[in-house]
Length: 212
Image (cartoon, rainbow, N blue to C red; front, side):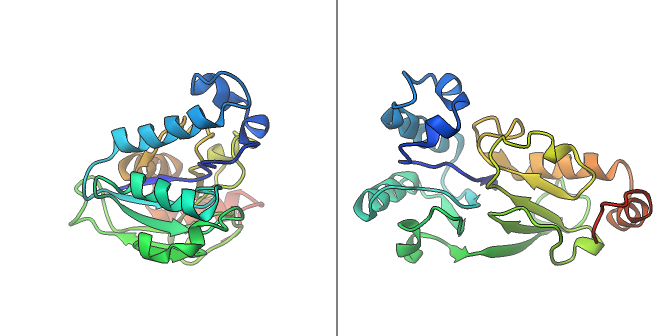
């Protein structure tokens, strides 16, 4: 299982807004969108295998409808399953609901211990393209995953909130897909040895900015 957001495939201005991609992806300059797209597609294909599940949290592909269809076929060519959470730049992707396992604005998933051996207990996750202040089951330790802010707030994953930015440009993602186990280990770091409920009770009392 993998998570990602803000791939911006085919977005001609993304390299002006996210110039770090030029160096990290070994591109020619801020106009080299063709090699940008190939870097992301090849990264995706090399990191995944048949049967893998990928949650894409918005701002996925920004090309015309026919080009989007072809890119989706390439990304799914070796049998991965994609759950798509809609972002603010997804006008073409939403026209292909049959290409995704699910399509929604918000998605909640409970990952079970008996299915993933590294989990200590059921792991509840809420996904949305946008960062949220509160979400379902947050008061019981549910984790929120989001994108949208790119690397504009590189400190946000280090806050006490149970929220992680999985965007491609974040230091946490470092231009790769993020495995579920990596997400879970980061969640445990936030809990700092406490159970989810202990952490919620503790942080509510000690962080005036924390919202249950």
